[in-house]
Image (tube, rainbow, N blue to C red):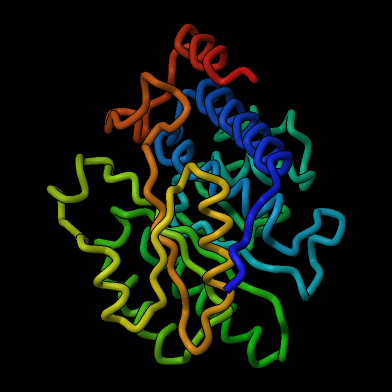
Length: 278
């Protein structure tokens, strides 16, 4: 099998974009004084790769029936999706600072009816994979080449509905579905291994009939390799277990559970943004 590689320039360009997305996340959560920075920062590289290299998606043709779909099942990480969509041109970057304000289109969790580029309203954990299954099955019935991508949190795997959806996807051989698990090891109440352990994640998905790939969730080259490998799977869905760091990019936030749903102060924001400069 030919190994998929990004060029050095592509890696540099994507890394620069991911850093801009991280700056947006810190700024918007600080402005709102509310939100979930830790799990948004851990997923920034995954969304950057998908939206700026992998997915067939164009803000100028947001309703194109043949577009790829992305479902943010861990909907509390809305800041990373909003920042990515703004960078992709779905709405003005300046609007990011309206996060969680009254009458803002940028609600605390993504709302499909309010903002272009949102494929599913999410927030109640455990439901996104089921919706992604429906999208993948519909694509097959349409004879379409579009692919469906979904991002789940590792703590979210404690929801029983996730495993019903995993069973469904394998039963219907949804090989046009690629799920990611943002495996940063922490949830709001502490380490996932201590709260209600879903480990070993890889063996569980394998037992449910999935093609399982493990990747470094902050190595763009490795993530690209994982997606390329997932696309070759036939007759079964794929899951990429992306090993990540909660709060990635901001040293004070990294691997600190308190930053799951806490906003920085203005002073902290200035420090964090300086750390995220190119």
